[in-house]
Image (cartoon, rainbow over all chains, first blue to last red; front, side, top):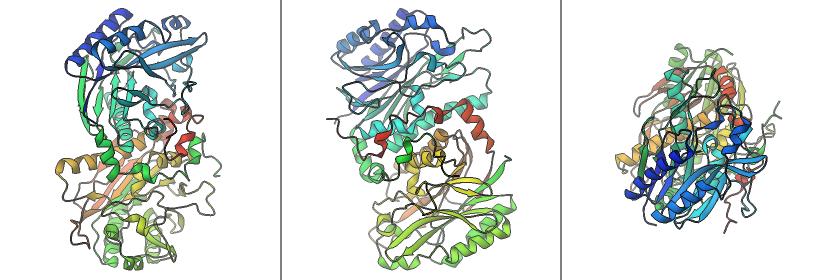
Length: 304
Length: 304
């Protein structure tokens, strides 16, 4: 396979959905001008991160798989002949909403979708209130962790909290994913000391580089930027830390954004490197599948 | 729980087993003098790394679980009242040899053992010739990936190639391991360019820090140093890259050795940090055990 040029976009988001999407489109155009064949957008890029509180009115923000965000991204993918990984707050039916990544192929068709499987829930990130955990589509015999075939290869699309789960990356790799992709919205509690902020950000980058390494796969992470105040006046809001990055299949950093500037970062990826690496670092060869059965247990607590 | 002081020892190894062990004992004494309650030794610390070629005579180096290395480490553990994680080439019976980590408790008793589960095999690392893959002991209902209880806590001991497998670290964490521990023998092919050497070493450190992060656990890795020539005159030998390190449960580096100096590195670990971290970064809470069943498959290849 030939090299492909991939991009991650990071941006701040305000309350005006149309303005957010317009800014996104401009950044996708920039990436395309620089040769991008695949553009990854951040999680929930059309809205502020609305999970800082639990508010039933927020469900009005959701849209269907046929909604305006999909239509605009599809038109742009077709116009620019590139693959776009977008993100929507999906209304599947009354009472069933998802945090969904949409993959628009280079011809504008919907190549596939991924509904966030691991849902976080902690102060300021009340996602379990909004998002039903992902499941398998009827045309996905492999279940919720199914990669998506596109013009630039088979994409292992996961979302944000999934980043902390080696299981998710491994399942995508075992299904033939060629690139791991993470749209994200993660940030700091402004009240935390700088040392804690640094540890959190380093951990976020490191654990994902670890997935790239353990699976010999390149990885793209797109994260939002900007301070977003909380609707709860007693809460300090979130400083989204950006640092979108692209690393290679040995976890080597290819390009990394900073924690404040909007923009598109780009890198060249050679899909053949995975094949070469797996010849000399053949982790998949030696997995002890005879001894992994307890990975589907909650806790291995029969030991004493 | 109170803080504990832990150490990793790295050293070069020559052909004289007694001299290697004497050097190890001196470094354990040094660590003890600085307050170490747990000392982790590198993989196969009594011998050169003998897997650079396949040679039936090498099996003579193996010893039983009751052998001299266990006896000497046990005596030292008892004398210094500390826990030692050692490593032997174990002869279990004719035709069944293992790469085995021995855990000597602070009273000199054998707290437990771990037989390397993932066995590598590549040019210069012909381990599948020598080591039968680990299995479960009859008193280990949890199987081969069983942590070991000691005076300083429950230790998740794994060995070298296991480092590349998130499954192994996760299984130890799910069984209540409080520290992840990796005795190691990894190095560079001297013929590789510096850029490749750097990527390999970074990957080795990063993937392990990733295990610490994903499981909210501190981690100790001990690796050998020194150039060891290959018995095969056409091979360039191995430059073992040292860089033994200890990181905290957010993957934060606490102490790291260089790639050439023998010695003991020490750090303080607070076991309560794992409990606190898991309250606010509760990865184990949200694992999708309903969707992980394919982790026990070799490849998820029914997709097309």
